Image 1 (cartoon, rainbow, N blue to C red):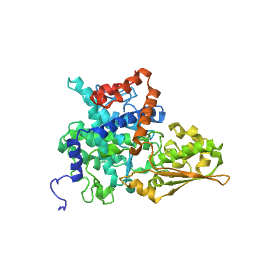
Image 2 (tube, rainbow, N blue to C red; image 1 turned 45 degrees about the vertical axis):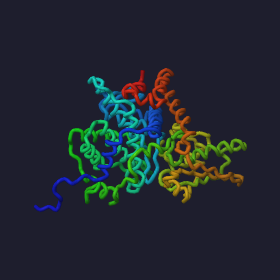
Image 3 (cartoon, rainbow, N blue to C red; image 1 turned 180 degrees about the vertical axis):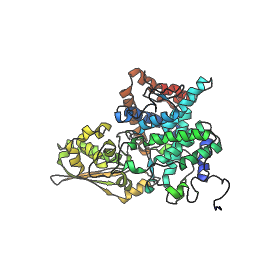
Image 4 (spheres, rainbow, N blue to C red; image 1 turned 135 degrees about the horizontal axis):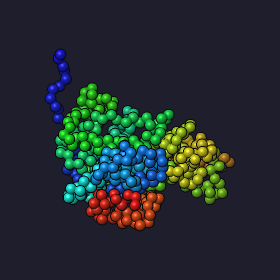
Amino acid sequence: MSSHLPQGRPAPDPLLVDIADYVQERTRFLGLALETARLCLIDTLGCGLEALDYPACTKLLGPVVPGTVVPHGARVPGTPYQLDPVTAAFNLGAMVRWLDFNDTWLAAEWGHPSDNLGGILMVADWLSRGAVAAGKPPLVMRDVLDAMVQAHEIQGVLALENSFNEVGLDHVVLVKVATTAVTGRLLGLSRAELIDAISLAWVDGQALRTYRHAPNTGSRKSWAAGDATSRGVRLALIARTGEMGCPTALSAPTWGFQEVSFGGKALRLARPLGSYVMENVLFKISFPAEFHGQTAVEAALALHARLAADGRSAADIESVTIRTQAACLRIIDKQGPLHNPADRDHCIQYMVAVALLHGRLTAADYEDAAAADPRIDSLRARIHCVEDAQFTADYLDPAKRSIANGLAVVLRDGSVLPEVLVEYPIGHKRRRAEGEPALEAKFRAKLARRFAPRQQQAILHASLDTARLAQMPVHEYVDLYCPR
C-alpha cells in the first residue's frame, strides 16, 4: 500500500523553538518585572485563600484517592493536603481562579496569567522538599518569581494577536502551554525535551468555551484553569521521561493545531518574549468581577454615592445605559435568567445593579441568597449596553489598553445624571501608584480571613519585601500558609 505521507521527522515549528529558547535563556528578571511578580504572587495566593470559604470549591480539593499523602509532596496553601505536583497544581489552580479575583490580561484573547501559579508554585515546592530530603539545596522564591514572569509573558504575548475565543476555544489553552514550558524548565528538561513538551501541550485536546456561555455557564469556568495548569505539569513530567513530541504539532497539514482548531490561521508571537506582560498586567483589586466590567462597577459606585448625596437611591432609576467595548458585549452582556454564581459574575448588568443598590460588590453578592433580592433583577432589566467604537479601539491600542465603561442614568422623574466614565480600573498600570496600597490591603484582608494574627505577621514579613522574599526557600515560604 503506497502512502503520500512524508517520512522522517521534520524540524520543529519555529514557535515551539522560540518558547523553549526563551524559558531556557531568559531566566532572571529585575526591576519592575520582579517587583510586579511579587505583587502578583501575594494577590494570587490571597484570592486562593478566600476561595476556601466556599464549599463548591473545597469539595474539589484534596487527593484523588481520599487519605493519600505523598512523602515530600507539595503542600497546598491554606489546606492540610500534601500531594503529588499534578494534583497539587489542580488544587491551587482551582482555588486561585474560583472567585474571578486574580489578575487579567486583555487583548485579541483574554485570560488570567496568574492561573499558572498553581503549576509553578506546586512544582517548585515539590522539588524543594525533595531536594532537602536528599541533602541538596532547595529552590528559592526567586525561582518562582522568575518563572511567573515567563509564564505571564508566554500566555500574554500569545494572546495579543491570536484569538482562540473566535474559534470556540477557551483561553486556558494558553495556561496549559505556559505552565508546560515553565515547569518543564524547573524540572530540568533539556532544550529538545522542552520543545517536545510544548508540542504535547498543543496536541492535547483543548477546552471549549461552552462552560462560559449560556445556556451552559457554570462552575467549570472556575476550575478550568486548575485543570489546565495541572495538565501542563503532567505533560512536562511525561516529556522528562524522554517521551517523543510532535515537532509540527502546530503546522502539520490536515492534522496540526492550526488546521484542526484554528481555522487554518498561523499562530504568531506579536513581539519578542521578554517581561512586557508582567510589567503591564491588570490586577483585580476592588471587585471579584470579570475584568471588562471593572470600570463599570467603579462608575456604579460613584453613582450610588451621588444618589445618596441627593437623598435618592437605586429605586429612583428608570434606566441605565452602559457605553462599553466590543469585548464586554461579547463576554458579559447578558439578559434573562442567571442560574448560578458563575453565571452572575459574568453579567455586567448584575454587577452594576448590585453596586447601584448596595454600594458594594463582593463574592458573596453572587451567591443564591444575595441574588434572591428581587430588586437586582428588576434593575438589571433596565440596564442596557451599547458599543462605543473608540472604546473598542482604545482597548486594542497597545499604547493605551484601556477598559472603558461610561454609565448614564435616567431617573424616574425624567432627569438625567451626568455620565460617569472610567477608562482605566484601579488595577491598571496607569494607576499602579494608587493601586499598590489597595492591593496590599486586599492581601491583608484575605490573610485575616484564614489565619491567626501571628501567622499573618509571619507571612507579611516574608512577602512584603522583594529582596527578602526572593532569598527564601520555596518550601519554607509555602509552609507559612499551612494550617497550624
